[in-house]
Length: 236
Image (cartoon, rainbow, N blue to C red; front, side, top):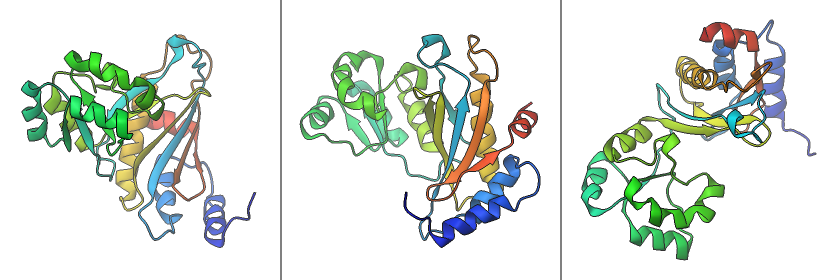
Protein backbone atom coordinates (compact mmCIF):
# COMPACT_ATOMS: atom_id res chain seq x y z
CA UNK A 1 0.00 0.00 0.00
CA UNK A 2 1.38 3.43 -0.97
CA UNK A 3 2.34 5.99 1.64
CA UNK A 4 -0.43 8.44 2.49
CA UNK A 5 0.16 12.11 1.68
CA UNK A 6 0.79 14.85 4.23
CA UNK A 7 -2.74 16.27 3.94
CA UNK A 8 -4.25 12.87 4.60
CA UNK A 9 -1.99 12.26 7.60
CA UNK A 10 -2.86 15.68 9.01
CA UNK A 11 -6.56 14.87 8.63
CA UNK A 12 -6.07 11.60 10.52
CA UNK A 13 -4.28 13.49 13.31
CA UNK A 14 -7.11 16.04 13.50
CA UNK A 15 -9.64 13.26 14.03
CA UNK A 16 -7.41 11.42 16.53
CA UNK A 17 -7.06 14.57 18.66
CA UNK A 18 -10.80 14.81 19.31
CA UNK A 19 -11.59 14.05 22.94
CA UNK A 20 -14.48 11.70 23.70
CA UNK A 21 -17.05 10.01 21.45
CA UNK A 22 -17.71 11.60 18.07
CA UNK A 23 -21.38 12.26 17.45
CA UNK A 24 -23.15 13.28 14.23
CA UNK A 25 -22.69 17.02 14.88
CA UNK A 26 -18.96 16.73 15.65
CA UNK A 27 -18.38 14.40 12.68
CA UNK A 28 -20.14 16.89 10.38
CA UNK A 29 -17.72 19.60 11.50
CA UNK A 30 -14.67 17.34 11.26
CA UNK A 31 -15.53 16.17 7.77
CA UNK A 32 -15.32 19.79 6.60
CA UNK A 33 -12.09 20.45 8.49
CA UNK A 34 -10.42 17.39 6.97
CA UNK A 35 -11.40 18.21 3.39
CA UNK A 36 -8.32 19.65 1.70
CA UNK A 37 -8.70 19.03 -2.03
CA UNK A 38 -9.20 21.73 -4.65
CA UNK A 39 -12.50 20.23 -5.79
CA UNK A 40 -15.75 20.05 -3.85
CA UNK A 41 -15.61 16.55 -2.38
CA UNK A 42 -18.68 14.45 -1.73
CA UNK A 43 -19.53 13.60 1.85
CA UNK A 44 -20.13 9.86 2.10
CA UNK A 45 -21.64 7.64 4.75
CA UNK A 46 -20.88 3.97 5.29
CA UNK A 47 -23.12 1.95 7.58
CA UNK A 48 -22.44 -1.63 8.60
CA UNK A 49 -25.63 -3.48 9.47
CA UNK A 50 -26.27 -6.68 11.40
CA UNK A 51 -28.20 -8.33 8.58
CA UNK A 52 -27.60 -11.28 6.28
CA UNK A 53 -28.51 -10.00 2.78
CA UNK A 54 -28.48 -13.58 1.44
CA UNK A 55 -31.97 -13.85 2.93
CA UNK A 56 -34.66 -11.84 1.13
CA UNK A 57 -36.34 -10.92 4.41
CA UNK A 58 -33.15 -9.21 5.59
CA UNK A 59 -32.63 -7.01 2.55
CA UNK A 60 -32.46 -3.30 3.35
CA UNK A 61 -33.37 -0.95 0.52
CA UNK A 62 -34.98 2.43 0.62
CA UNK A 63 -35.11 6.03 -0.48
CA UNK A 64 -34.94 9.33 1.37
CA UNK A 65 -35.15 12.94 0.26
CA UNK A 66 -32.26 14.77 1.90
CA UNK A 67 -33.31 18.11 3.48
CA UNK A 68 -30.53 20.01 1.72
CA UNK A 69 -30.20 17.91 -1.42
CA UNK A 70 -27.08 16.10 -2.57
CA UNK A 71 -25.21 19.08 -3.97
CA UNK A 72 -25.00 17.30 -7.30
CA UNK A 73 -26.88 17.90 -10.54
CA UNK A 74 -28.83 14.71 -11.14
CA UNK A 75 -29.51 13.80 -14.76
CA UNK A 76 -32.90 12.12 -15.11
CA UNK A 77 -34.03 9.91 -17.99
CA UNK A 78 -37.76 9.18 -18.26
CA UNK A 79 -38.99 6.30 -20.41
CA UNK A 80 -42.71 6.56 -21.07
CA UNK A 81 -45.31 6.58 -23.82
CA UNK A 82 -46.13 9.89 -25.50
CA UNK A 83 -49.03 10.58 -23.14
CA UNK A 84 -46.61 11.02 -20.21
CA UNK A 85 -43.64 12.50 -22.02
CA UNK A 86 -44.82 16.12 -21.92
CA UNK A 87 -45.43 15.79 -18.18
CA UNK A 88 -41.87 14.53 -17.71
CA UNK A 89 -40.37 17.40 -19.69
CA UNK A 90 -42.38 20.00 -17.77
CA UNK A 91 -41.18 18.48 -14.49
CA UNK A 92 -37.56 19.00 -15.52
CA UNK A 93 -36.44 15.60 -16.83
CA UNK A 94 -33.20 15.87 -18.80
CA UNK A 95 -34.02 13.12 -21.30
CA UNK A 96 -37.47 11.87 -22.30
CA UNK A 97 -38.45 9.17 -24.79
CA UNK A 98 -38.89 5.44 -25.11
CA UNK A 99 -37.73 3.21 -27.98
CA UNK A 100 -35.14 5.74 -29.12
CA UNK A 101 -33.37 5.73 -25.75
CA UNK A 102 -33.78 1.98 -25.25
CA UNK A 103 -32.01 1.45 -28.58
CA UNK A 104 -29.35 4.02 -27.70
CA UNK A 105 -28.57 2.24 -24.43
CA UNK A 106 -28.58 -1.22 -26.03
CA UNK A 107 -26.54 -0.44 -29.12
CA UNK A 108 -24.30 2.42 -28.02
CA UNK A 109 -23.96 1.71 -24.31
CA UNK A 110 -25.26 5.23 -23.62
CA UNK A 111 -25.28 6.00 -19.89
CA UNK A 112 -25.31 9.77 -19.62
CA UNK A 113 -27.95 9.79 -16.87
CA UNK A 114 -27.98 9.20 -13.12
CA UNK A 115 -31.56 8.05 -12.52
CA UNK A 116 -33.99 6.23 -14.79
CA UNK A 117 -37.72 6.64 -14.21
CA UNK A 118 -40.24 4.55 -16.17
CA UNK A 119 -44.00 4.15 -16.19
CA UNK A 120 -45.38 0.66 -15.41
CA UNK A 121 -46.89 0.21 -18.87
CA UNK A 122 -43.49 0.33 -20.59
CA UNK A 123 -41.58 -1.94 -18.20
CA UNK A 124 -42.01 -4.83 -20.64
CA UNK A 125 -39.77 -2.92 -23.04
CA UNK A 126 -37.46 -1.50 -20.38
CA UNK A 127 -36.96 -4.98 -18.92
CA UNK A 128 -34.67 -5.93 -21.81
CA UNK A 129 -32.13 -3.45 -20.38
CA UNK A 130 -31.95 -5.34 -17.08
CA UNK A 131 -28.67 -7.16 -17.74
CA UNK A 132 -27.00 -3.91 -18.69
CA UNK A 133 -28.51 -1.48 -16.17
CA UNK A 134 -29.05 -3.83 -13.22
CA UNK A 135 -25.38 -4.26 -12.23
CA UNK A 136 -24.95 -0.49 -12.46
CA UNK A 137 -27.84 0.21 -10.11
CA UNK A 138 -29.76 2.09 -12.79
CA UNK A 139 -32.71 -0.23 -13.35
CA UNK A 140 -36.01 1.39 -12.30
CA UNK A 141 -37.78 -0.27 -9.38
CA UNK A 142 -41.20 0.29 -7.76
CA UNK A 143 -39.63 0.13 -4.28
CA UNK A 144 -37.42 3.11 -5.06
CA UNK A 145 -40.28 5.05 -6.62
CA UNK A 146 -38.74 4.98 -10.09
CA UNK A 147 -41.51 2.87 -11.63
CA UNK A 148 -44.59 5.06 -11.37
CA UNK A 149 -47.35 6.82 -13.28
CA UNK A 150 -46.71 9.96 -11.18
CA UNK A 151 -43.83 10.96 -13.42
CA UNK A 152 -43.83 14.64 -12.46
CA UNK A 153 -43.61 13.91 -8.73
CA UNK A 154 -40.88 11.32 -9.25
CA UNK A 155 -38.75 13.71 -11.30
CA UNK A 156 -39.26 16.55 -8.80
CA UNK A 157 -38.24 14.33 -5.86
CA UNK A 158 -35.05 13.17 -7.57
CA UNK A 159 -34.11 16.72 -8.54
CA UNK A 160 -34.78 17.85 -4.95
CA UNK A 161 -32.25 15.39 -3.53
CA UNK A 162 -33.92 12.00 -3.26
CA UNK A 163 -31.40 9.18 -2.96
CA UNK A 164 -31.76 5.43 -3.32
CA UNK A 165 -29.70 3.08 -1.15
CA UNK A 166 -29.38 -0.68 -0.89
CA UNK A 167 -27.39 -3.03 1.33
CA UNK A 168 -24.58 -4.88 -0.43
CA UNK A 169 -23.81 -8.58 -0.06
CA UNK A 170 -21.63 -7.89 2.98
CA UNK A 171 -24.36 -6.04 4.90
CA UNK A 172 -23.01 -2.54 4.20
CA UNK A 173 -24.72 0.61 2.99
CA UNK A 174 -22.76 3.30 1.15
CA UNK A 175 -24.17 6.58 -0.10
CA UNK A 176 -23.32 10.25 -0.61
CA UNK A 177 -25.24 12.71 1.56
CA UNK A 178 -23.89 16.05 0.37
CA UNK A 179 -20.79 18.08 -0.39
CA UNK A 180 -17.90 19.38 1.69
CA UNK A 181 -19.02 22.91 0.77
CA UNK A 182 -22.24 22.39 2.76
CA UNK A 183 -22.37 23.89 6.23
CA UNK A 184 -21.79 21.47 9.10
CA UNK A 185 -25.45 21.91 10.04
CA UNK A 186 -26.61 20.91 6.56
CA UNK A 187 -24.36 17.84 6.60
CA UNK A 188 -25.70 16.85 10.02
CA UNK A 189 -29.32 17.30 8.87
CA UNK A 190 -28.76 15.13 5.81
CA UNK A 191 -26.92 12.47 7.82
CA UNK A 192 -29.70 12.36 10.39
CA UNK A 193 -32.42 12.02 7.73
CA UNK A 194 -30.54 9.15 6.08
CA UNK A 195 -29.87 7.29 9.34
CA UNK A 196 -33.46 7.70 10.52
CA UNK A 197 -34.67 5.96 7.38
CA UNK A 198 -32.08 3.19 7.76
CA UNK A 199 -33.27 2.52 11.30
CA UNK A 200 -36.92 2.64 10.24
CA UNK A 201 -36.23 -0.06 7.65
CA UNK A 202 -34.84 -2.55 10.17
CA UNK A 203 -36.07 -6.00 9.03
CA UNK A 204 -38.06 -7.89 11.64
CA UNK A 205 -35.93 -10.94 10.81
CA UNK A 206 -32.70 -9.14 11.81
CA UNK A 207 -31.53 -10.34 15.23
CA UNK A 208 -29.01 -8.84 17.62
CA UNK A 209 -27.32 -5.49 16.98
CA UNK A 210 -28.74 -3.92 13.83
CA UNK A 211 -26.59 -0.78 13.56
CA UNK A 212 -23.02 -2.09 13.85
CA UNK A 213 -21.01 0.97 12.81
CA UNK A 214 -21.40 4.34 11.10
CA UNK A 215 -18.59 6.17 9.31
CA UNK A 216 -18.53 9.56 7.58
CA UNK A 217 -15.83 10.71 5.16
CA UNK A 218 -15.09 12.91 2.19
CA UNK A 219 -14.14 11.44 -1.19
CA UNK A 220 -10.41 11.64 -0.50
CA UNK A 221 -10.43 11.90 3.28
CA UNK A 222 -10.13 9.42 6.16
CA UNK A 223 -13.15 7.80 7.74
CA UNK A 224 -14.64 9.38 10.86
CA UNK A 225 -16.29 6.72 12.99
CA UNK A 226 -19.43 8.05 14.64
CA UNK A 227 -20.34 6.85 18.11
CA UNK A 228 -23.14 4.33 17.72
CA UNK A 229 -24.84 5.31 20.98
CA UNK A 230 -24.87 8.97 19.97
CA UNK A 231 -26.57 8.04 16.71
CA UNK A 232 -29.24 6.04 18.50
CA UNK A 233 -29.82 8.82 21.06
CA UNK A 234 -30.12 11.53 18.42
CA UNK A 235 -32.54 9.50 16.35
CA UNK A 236 -34.88 8.53 19.17
